[in-house]
Every structure is written in C-alpha cells, then in structure tokens.
Image (tube, rainbow, N blue to C red; front, side, top):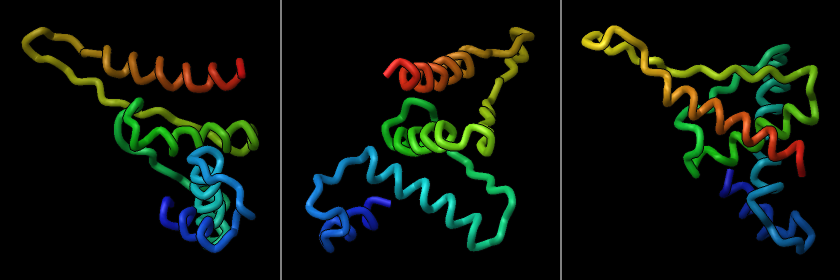
Length: 115
C-alpha cells in the first residue's frame, strides 16, 4: 500500500498535494478491496484484518474498514472474531482481552460519529 502511494506521489498523481496516511493510504486499501471483488466478479468479498486491535500496524486497515462501512452501510458487514481462552484450572473463560478489543473497536466508530 505504502509503495503504491509513494510511487503515485512521486509521479505527481496527487497534483502536489501533501500525502497523508488518511486519506491516501486508506483510500488505496479501499480501492484494493473493491478491485479484488471486481476482478473476480465476486458478489461477496471477505477481508480479514488480522492482528490485535490497537496495534499501530493495523490502525490504517481498521480505519479503511470503518470508512468503507460509513460510505456503504448496507453493503458492509463487520464481524469481530476473538479468542476466549478457557482456563481449565479455574474452570472459566477469560474474556478481558475480548472486552478490551471490542471496546476499542466501538470507540473508533463512536469517535468518528462525534467528529
């Protein structure tokens, strides 16, 4: 993603505009998601955003997903899958990491609504 954006900037594809992560890199991510569906003539495109919510490396992908959902609310479904470890010696599931990632994801969307 970054190389494509940098190459486009060097070729004056942004008409001298300052290149920023948002919107330029997020737009590139969204364009690639759309192209994947178009090239494969797919009605449904499944994109996995791996990693941990809150990690810097993933933030632009989560932001692109959020933007895509805002622009196409009826066409985008986001599903949060998380690991719930079962501690046999305690006899219970540990859900704190799942709660924290859900909280962070909700905060990302809530912050956008406010701005």
